[in-house]
Length: 201
Image 1 (cartoon, rainbow, N blue to C red):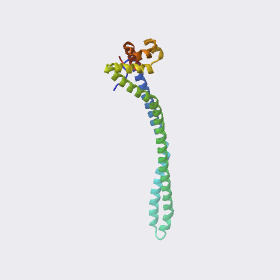
Image 2 (image 1 turned 90 degrees about the vertical axis):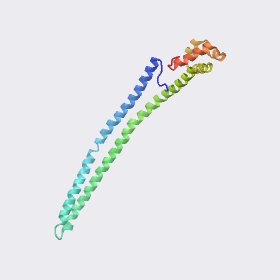
Image 3 (image 1 turned 135 degrees about the horizontal axis):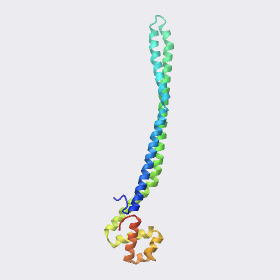
Image 4 (image 1 turned 135 degrees about the vertical axis):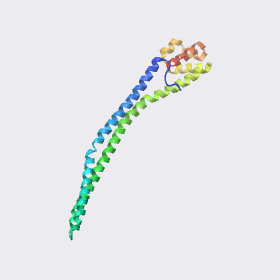
């Protein structure tokens, strides 16, 4: 499979377009990574809240346990501490939920920043490259066939796709010459099609 043209100018243009497309995609992937790191840092208050909630729960559980050891009134004394411990669990859950929300938001936004520009770049750059690869493969196959039919098909493609002024330089009426099977004109048209694709003839 041929990926790049034979002619230096066309090959340089293809390489430049490929490099620009890949650089564009890499730039947005890098931007998405940086954005994800920045947004993930916003989860720090959630971490502090979760730690504070866990600490409060732990301390209140210890205090409730100590209060239970007081004779006769231990259970009544431990209830406020147990209630405060439940509040700590709520704080901890809220902190964890905040962190999850920030993580989901960071991931969604980062993926959008990375994927959307990449899809646009691939939609603009990839189809023409695939078309060129396909046409170059078919043109090389016809050229290597070295038959009148192969040259005729290449000439027909030149008639369909080459600029009018380039066709005029081949023959005053290239369509009629091709229809008559003028070998000289057909060969020139086939060479024109190969040149148009950046291939050697």
